[in-house]
Image (cartoon, rainbow, N blue to C red):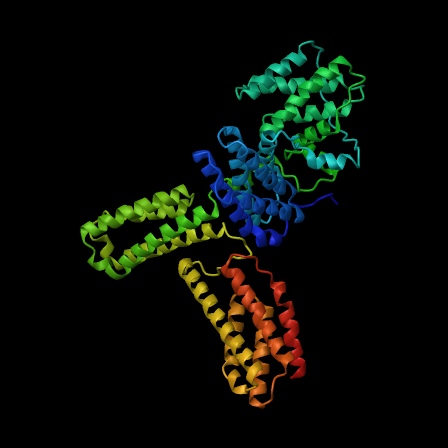
Length: 547
């Protein structure tokens, strides 16, 4: 078993505070903008920062330590900037802006994907640390804690032997200099690989043998490494260690931090050596490979939810209008109107291209091209085909938008041949109607408690069954069961003209309260926990027992 076997986690706690964090970020971003443009302290900035710092504390409590640090340091940096608004350091503002942006994007990303990838946060965290003159968090921080407990023998592959050379250190410095300037050539990368091989051979009989073997492994895959600032710092530390090693090979010993950092490079690939080292360290998939990081980064750095929602709304509105025009006027379209429709389809096709929805892009372009033929639209078969293409395109963007919504909040789609926007409208209508039935039932039960008149509950069984039906549609089977049992019980009491006790009324209210919470959570994009119906089901079972 690995020390930490998975990047997957339950985002419920984070989803609950997400809105608060988002609001705090907006306040701080607005304050930064005011400060940078007017060199004046915006009103209420202290309250905004206090709120931000509270968010940092909550993030720390729910085991989001790197995220909490970014929030904490962002607030600290803002206070530093506020001390002298007349002389603002541009780099401080950039670091702060990056901190708040990454905080917002990363929270949205991990809530959607239900994965934690702290590797994405390191660059941003380091920039905040530099701005505040704090010690830098190292890439190998997660490995360093493991090395405190174990000192494994990695049994690494033997490096090939090379002739001794006095120019090895100089060669590494020259190649590293090119990398730092982002001007490295293929020869520079080959040179670094040679240096790694040479050092592993030279250190064979020294106390630091294992460290230099790890350097050999890391530099041997230099072409595949994703190079960022933390990794450049690791490469710089190798240069310092080369100098120390050559001065006293028998006395040199790499620090725990250096060892952890080089190990983080060694496990970044998907080859056998990387997997072997992971096994020795008992590291599962909680530290991702560079390939996995690239895959996830496409989502993290792609369009956010607000952008996708805005695009989806605009495109869906435009396509709905086109669909209506065709549905009701396809046989009476003037050539001018047909040309206008053609231009709209081409414009929309281009939007789908940008969104990488290539199938929809190609289909819309083909249909637009077909409209060049005279009276093509008057053909009922073509009109229907065009309608189907538009529906399919609308659904594809609907699906794309759903990718930016937590799986816990997604409405299940079982039939892609119906319009998703209309499905969403039906879903919203269902939530509203269920909410109305819940309110009416709750009011009737409250009235009954005051007046003890069974006639007040006349419509309650039917209302409870309506809510039960909604629960079934929303996938809350326990909620449906609890409400149906409650409906049957209330109906039975009315038929028998038997009064309900205060406890029995409360049992029915428990079932309604759970349904009410579910609907509110869905409306407000909050997590849906089906365990919320446990109390409701338990309460309804007590009614069943009584009956």
